[in-house]
Length: 286
Image (cartoon, rainbow, N blue to C red):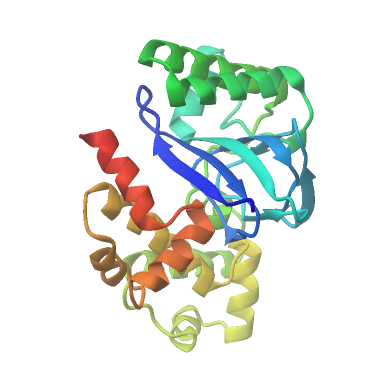
């Protein structure tokens, strides 16, 4: 019987780049967003995912190019599941390569999310394999080549940047009371991960009705406030796990009920349980 396997680790030669190699069958990603870019190569099977409100499919040989802070999901489109390799470079890593290419058009974005381009697939595959098995010179060189190739072939001008799940900060310039209210709520949730206020309190703070706040918040971030908060908690959990804090203590510090609660949300975003994630990080640091 086929089993699910997943490994999530840091690039040994380039700071700010994470990697995932996985085969998933029943695993489903919940609605979430990454602060990083997400560049994935489907090696077998078909992944189906909602990305910014559009339902997409990626089959064998497809390259998926996801911009930072765009809410998305992920699950198998067939009973066979899917196998893929993913690069997660921080925005600064990608913009540094773009600057070397003479890019002067704002933070790059990728208008075509799923594409079938053998050259791009080869670049992602080579960079990922080198990061898994190669030396530091080869892995860093091939990563740079992959990012440069993707930028040249598929990138377009984008905004100056975004922060927070769903990109609320990236749309902070949108006029109106609702946008300002959402920014205020996001800031408060950042401050009160472990002790968030009730919806009624948030609504009173902004002067909006609860219904109006929920509608505005989802419109700005792509998520309702409680889901946005869980994204923040997972991101903070990753930072604590990187620092060696035991998962059970992490759960308490970020506001999850217990370690099982942390594990459930963490895996739905990262793809691996927090303990497995931490083992790879601490091994890398040693």
